[in-house]
Length: 463
Image 1 (cartoon, one colour):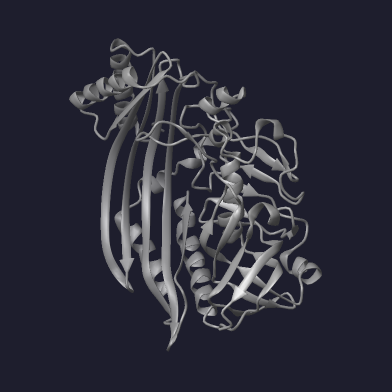
Image 2 (cartoon, one colour; image 1 turned 180 degrees about the horizontal axis):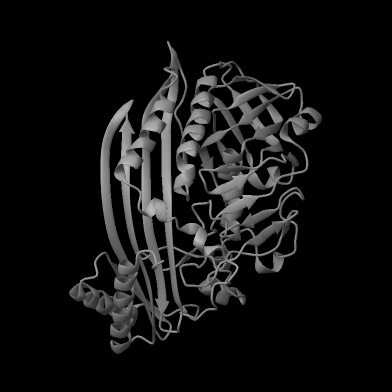
């Protein structure tokens, strides 16, 4: 079998070779090219009907150069020889006048491990999928979403994409990674007479064409039924104490804050609560074990090398409450006296930053129903989504609990409206009563259990 996107990869490699040659001849000491090609078709739906379709393909190329300890960067979205020449000249010119920084480095790297499941990112059936089949999938989505007339489809889409990423530098690094995916999303609400819910949404992807239709139908059914169920609403009570958090809310409020403080650039710049010296120290309750999972090919963040060409690997960041490591690129690694962890982030349009790839919070030992029955009070709030302010530095959060349920005796009684929650992330994270054994993947990216957390204030309008 020929290499996927062979023609496009060849074009990217020739452009990268030309850019690096131009940069070095122009005065750069080292150069790095991050480039990509992507093509996608999208079928959209709005207001209970098919609305639009689109198809596009594009190249992007970014050049980073170092002149001594000065960095320059420029990017373009064409492989035209004239534009590439101008891009190289601009990057070098910017590098010559930029302030120096001893942590700016372009480095070579080791190869991606042989055991990395690279081939799982590509599916020929998806790459060659007909537009008619994609339309059939969109019809599956539409039919399932509108099967219950109480559900109102506001926006939805089905997309099929194929693309490749290239990272080459003058130190010998050369990486190529091709991916295909089918993605779908739905945004909607439920209406029954004058009873109206708030909007909610979800998105999902499949790497294999054969699995997409059934997964589209089942995910839309679950979403639709959940929205219709939220029409049953009633009051909540004011209290401070235990609150249950569904996976999306747990990630949005709490794990996103951990992600911020794990970021090596934030540690280096002193904006993180944590320091290099705290590795091995307790930072959360012992119930928390957090991993970065870039090799999980079912996730949107799956990748086998980072923005600098460094191989990625599954890593434990927090183990039973103890800080095990940080998220590092070459810049932050050098600044902290550590090595990159393969967490350089970004694409051809920007220089490297730092980010996790796909976070996974491990579950506990008990099923969610058992945890509620054994550890929860007679009544409490279950938060599915959060809309509000969350400050990762101070840890303070406050906002509206969206799609929240009131639980009685460990079981759902009704949904609640206009209910506020607030607290301090780092205080609450040390008061974890338990995590569910079951894990849910959120929008095909992060994975999390449900959680029972103490120290949260709940304020209800009483409606």
